[in-house]
Image 1 (cartoon, rainbow, N blue to C red):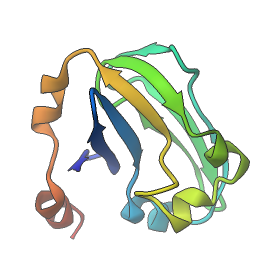
Image 2: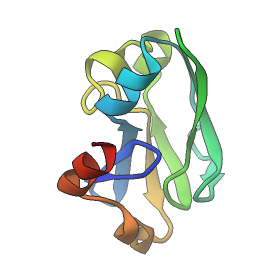
Image 3: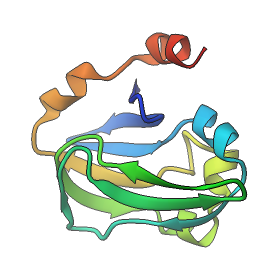
Image 4: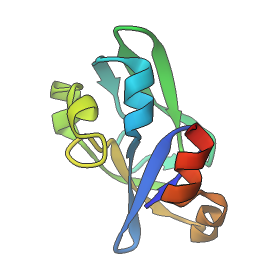
Length: 119
């Protein structure tokens, strides 16, 4: 897994990346109550705001970690936003993206670096 400074995680799955937010992010946000995901087929650029999340504490946006095409979204998360709180790196994933430039992943942190970053 790789991690961004925006508290997203990315896990390679074939030629796609599964993307979600970290446990640290869910702890900071509190209980999620609403999630708006991008559409499958959307072409996004790194840094684009593509997901809206609302929690009991705040509203936030999740940005595209890499350039690419959205290949899947987690419909279950839309119906049950709390999945991100209870299973941030499992069932609480947000979307899958096929990166047009996988080298954009090179600057992301591994788990040890991310743990240091948030401490």
